[in-house]
Amino acid sequence: MSGPGWFLAGAGCGLLAWWLAQRARAAVVRRAVEAEAALAELRRERDGLAAGVQGATGGLLVCDSNGILVLANELACALAGLPAGAWQGRRLAELLPWPKLVDHLPPAAGTAAGEVAFEQDLQGDPAEPGRALGVRIRPTPSGGCVVAIDDHSRLKRLESLRRDFVANVSHELKTPLAAIQGFVETMQDDAEMPAETRQRFLERIARQVHRLGTLVQDLLTLSRLDEQRPLDGPVVPQDLAALVREVGRDLQPLADKRRIVLRVQVPAAPLWLAADAEALRQVVGNLVDNAIKYTPEGGMVAVSLADQAGRARLEVVDTGIGLSPDDQERVFERFYRVDRARSRELGGTGLGLSIVKNTVRNLGGEVGVRSAIGRGSTFWVEWPLAPPAG
Ligand SMILES: Nc1ncnc2c1ncn2[C@@H]1O[C@H](COP(=O)(O)OP(=O)(O)OP(=O)(O)O)[C@@H](O)[C@H]1O
Ligand SMILES: [Mg+2]
Image (cartoon, rainbow, N blue to C red; front, side):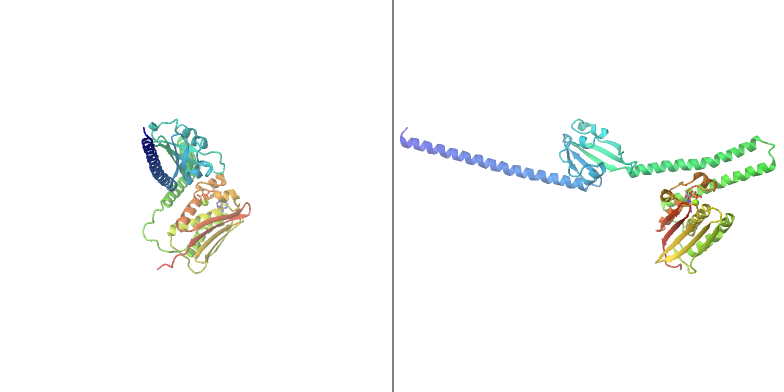
C-alpha cells in the first residue's frame, strides 16, 4: 500500500475507535441514568414502606430473607425493648431471642409456614408483673417476614381481674350457703330440738340469707355501673344537702348502738347534683356506714358537706382504726378488705367502696382517702354541681 493509502486506512481506524468509544460512553451514561432512576424508585418504595411502618398503629418489624432487621417502628422498639437506632443491620433473632420468634424467622423458616401468632411473656420487670406481648409473624413473598407486636398486658390484667372476681364471688356465695346447709341439716337430724334452739338456728339462717341478698344486690349494682347503663327515666337534680342529712338520720341508731358520736354538718342552702337519688344515697351511706363500722366504741364520726367553687365536697372523718398507705391504695378494689374476718363478722362483702368509686366516677366526680393507722380516716368525694332543679 502506498503512503496515502496507509494514511487513509489509519485515519479510518482512528475514526472507528473514536466512534466505538463514544458509543460505549453513551451506553454507560444511559445505563447510569437508568440505574439512578431505578434506585430512586427503590428509595421511594423504601421510604413509602418506612413511612407505612412508622405510621402503623401497632408495633411492626420488617426482616429481609437473611433475618436481618431492616425496618422497625418506634412502638415496636418501645414494646420489645429494642435499643433505639442501634438495631439496623442486626439479626432479629439476636436482638429478640424469644424461642417461638427465632423458630419462625428467615432464613431457617420458609415462606410456606404461613402466619404464626403467639403470646410472649416479658418477665424480669418486677414493677410490671404480667407484661405480655402479642406477636404475629407473616412471611413476605421475597423470603423475609413482617413481625407485628401488640401490648397484651392490659388484656392479661383484665383476664386476671376477671378470674379473681369470679373466685371471690364464688367464695362469698359458698360461705353463707355452707352455713345455711349446716343449720338446716342439724335441724333435720334432730327432730327433738328444743324450740329456742330451733329459733336461734332460724335466726342465723335468716342472717345468712340476708347476707346473700346484699351480696347479689351489690353485684347487680356493680354490673349496672360497669355497663354505665342509663337510668330509667330522666335524671332530676337532687339536693345533696338534704340527702346527707337524711343518711345521717338513718344511720344514727347504728352509731348509738356502737356508742359513736355522729356529727353531720351541711349547708342550709340546697346543693344540686344531676344524679339518681338512690345512687347518691348509696355513696354517702357506704362511707358513713364504714366510718361507724371501723371506729371503736367511744369514737367520733363527722360528716360535712360544702360548696367549693362550683363543686360539692363531702368529707366523712372518723377517729377509727385507720388504714396503712398500702391499704389506702387498695380499699377501692372489689372484695378488698384489710381484715377479712373482721369485715365479714360485721356483715361486709368488701364491695361497698368499689360501688362508691364507680358511682362517683360515673357522675363525673372524684373520690379519695387520707388516713393514718390508729388515728382515723377521711374519705372525701367531690362532684360538679348542677343547675338547680326546675
Ligand atoms: N373508715 C374506714 N376506716 C378503716 N378502714 C376502712 C374504712 N372504710 C373501709 N375500710 C376498709 O376497707 C375495706 C373495704 O371497704 P368496703 O366498704 O369496700 O367493704 P366492707 O365495708 O368490708 O363491706 P361492705 O361495704 O360491702 O359491707 C373494709 O373491709 C375495711 O377493711
Ligand atoms: Mg363498707
